[in-house]
Length: 335
Image (cartoon, rainbow, N blue to C red; front, side):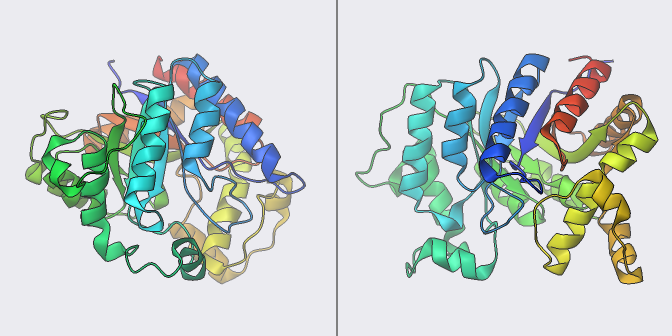
């Protein structure tokens, strides 16, 4: 069976009893493993003011990962554009592309990646940094990174160092908004299906494909879909290792934020009836089982969505668990 390329999404999760620096070193180790196993991309997210996430500044982390890997494309999943001036984003990624030609992806999202107070601290008093100006700011970034269709949005500005190649720009989203704007601009689209199984991925992708306007770099629609996965020797072990992700999902929805707890601590955590109801719709990990079971689920996801690529997320206590998961899936997928 011919299968689509697989990639990896990482948040540099901070585990209980360890530091943020440990989490960042773990991310680099996972990236090196993904590179050796034949995964296509390694993306890092942008989140702020969260005890469990050390991935706050994608360009810095991308540079560290790219320096420690050889082949794999490295990018943002994503940069939350309303938090940053477009010119700054363009210069950061132009510089990364100059250092690592043809290996840099710029995934762009519209959400803040944090709470409102932290978003305000990031943006300061600038009236220019708002969600409402996302389309304008996106066009500016595109123009600065070589898209001739948006060149008129940049005035005399030029992202330096002047690159010989350009990063691949993606739109990220978990709604129909991102699908429609990426379609209008002829950009590849990554749907954040790992956010929730109940998300309306089918409507978003239908809108993207039906409204797609061909561009020079992408004459046809191109879709990547994310999924959260954990693979182990047995289904029972995988479910046990997925325990921390369930507690993390619950913590995000209830405001009880903290570092990732161990599988043993997650198994011992007492849950209320309300907590259990919430976990029915927020499983934490969508596909947890043996490699063959996870691959069967991923095959079904590709068949359902028509995805051209998949990107695998996964909240685990130990980076070694992620490395083992990636190795098992790579073998079963045929990378």
